[in-house]
Image 1 (spheres, rainbow, N blue to C red):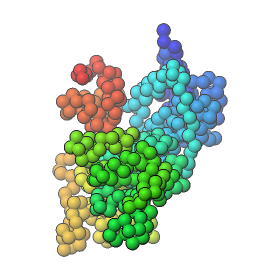
Image 2: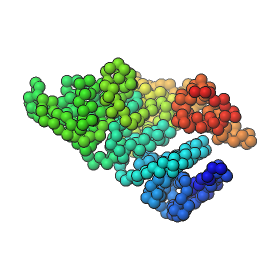
Image 3: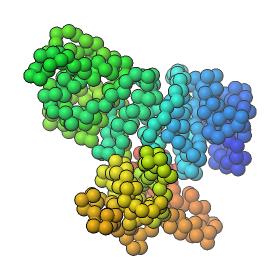
Length: 483
């Protein structure tokens, strides 16, 4: 018989504690509950549970502080933090401090058992391997990455996990999705944060000047080199260098980058002196570098040196739930620059923003709102004020850039769809709403993707591993295709 495992749940809401106990307690699972962080910590020290599930908003000290105390007492402890209002900083800090996961409470009705099962499996593996997980030091930084979607939560978690190392990171994603912000966050949450963070766009500098820009040059090294120049690697010693659009880097410069990564040494253009630099590389590309390697336009050995950890930023059209939050953030930033109250968004304007595919991603959204803020004459933005896909030169003579098409007639907004679901559930109380939504959405995603689990998981905004576990739970209703 399998050993009974213990989970400690710490939350101020007794209803939530009762719900978790109902969901998890059984012959193989003992569920302990506490409503305060101090009693939760005492119970942890006394019982040494396999897993702790703790709310961020606890008293007399926060869930993050509880995590720190638990990890100090037991460096291998597995803690999942939950919150109804998880911010970018709280997610990153939690993962950096060693949390196993950070889950928004609204996701728990769908993912509680999956998340707990994954953590308990990790606990079993830790016990068998006796792996030590060092506690990381928390540093306070402010970043400008905004997002509450599951896809962006995964990005924040990855930033938290890689920040404490010096591993090279490759950030991928479409143009305008925010790759430089991710690189900056990695630097800010790292031990190098007090040193330089420098960014260079490899596509914006002519090939014959890029080597000089990166490594510097000696006086007289080439025509026009009237003085010695210190390159970005020297300027970035002990700091972080962000190489954007690295897929555009010429092969001869790639060779020199590879030597710096391998040996930590280089020489200036036209110089004989060997110089040393301790620089962490974060690079970004919207190209498929695997294809570039096959075409011999990108060095395979350099690719593997740079691709130690990969963080992919999803396009804005795949995280629609972030659009309103991003829009409000940009309007607040615009207002701060103008020293005026921020513009407000009408619900109709939000629906227009959410219905647009955003080929230019977050950058296009920011530029659109900047134009709208300049052109509007009111303190609230309406659909007509938002020039989607319209440049200044294309705007009408009226000056507001007449706009587009709100959602087509008959199209339901997410809010309208939710209202219909709740009305339906109210008429038939025998149908539990959340389990029904999980089952039907999963079935529909599998149907729409032709039973392709990778595409279905992407459509649902979850990982493939989560989808597979969900399919196993729903196996009585769903026919799971063989891989």
